Figure: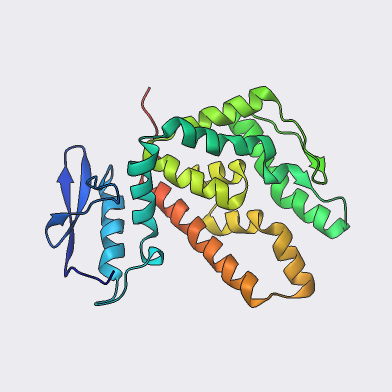
Length: 238
């Protein structure tokens, strides 16, 4: 659809803030009023809509924060346990745990970039994970998986929306949690998640398809990181 409104605004709504388009509350695809807990996030969402060029077709690429908020309100609130499980299951096969056996330059790069993140997860969550060479499945300690699941479940519904996206895009729950805790920037998360591909590009060069795909991954990681930051690390109480 084309831009159909002239102005955007934000107003207080109960304990949260909602976005207005020409004075009317914005709604999600499921017709819920889009209310978010922080003014900063509401203003950023309003800014997305305000930045859509006049008479332009509105696309998903214009509205990454809106999409994450709507998913949190429409899907996570109704399927919270399933979203937690779908996110937490990555702890059992985290990208960072599967290392190359050669060449030595790639082995070294993986160790340099990935091992500090696993060490951080072990220290921060008391959740050490096992590292293996190759792609053969390695079982992770049940206690570590349970603690990482608890870390996922501690996030609010809206935060879970972004955390799931980050985990799915990166192929790593540890990377996603590190972004949520501001241990990694979005660009650092990209470098970690795409390490193997970036290594191959250095050796053999890039192609237009890979370049376009990487641009999309960067945008999604940046959106997730920004969304969580604007939520101000919202956690569940108690």
